Length: 138
Image (cartoon, rainbow, N blue to C red; front, side, top):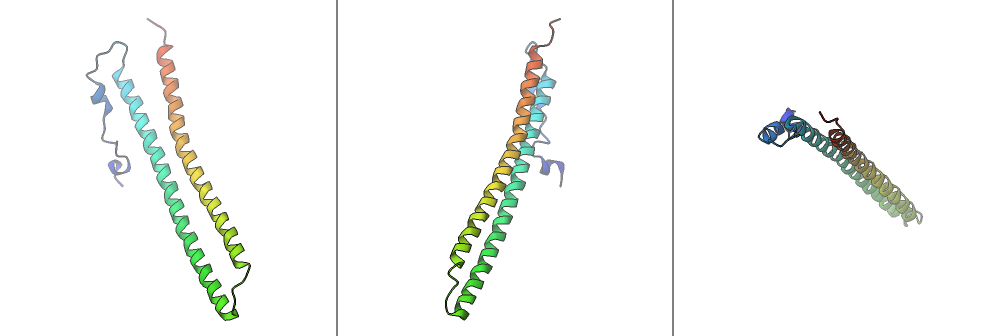
């Protein structure tokens, strides 16, 4: 996979964007570096979210296949015995609830991990901002 396909911001050069700014006390290269780190954090968070959501979709497909096989087995067993198992509905409901819980936990974990990447970068931004204003005056 090419660098630009992996990261859509790879070709973006923020130094060009900030180079013409002539504000006192503003370091365009530092500002550009900060924005580049922000874009990288967003890209990493989006990548993690995408991976997690793909895992959830894959698991949903597996659950659907398992459920379809179970329904077929129940129907086949019910036809041969003359009557379906009375506990089958209860067992199916319990399994469905367990599956829903599993999917919810997967989504929660994915969202937490993606948010943590953004939160970490926000904390770094605050620390960089704090250091900018606590530099000794010359």
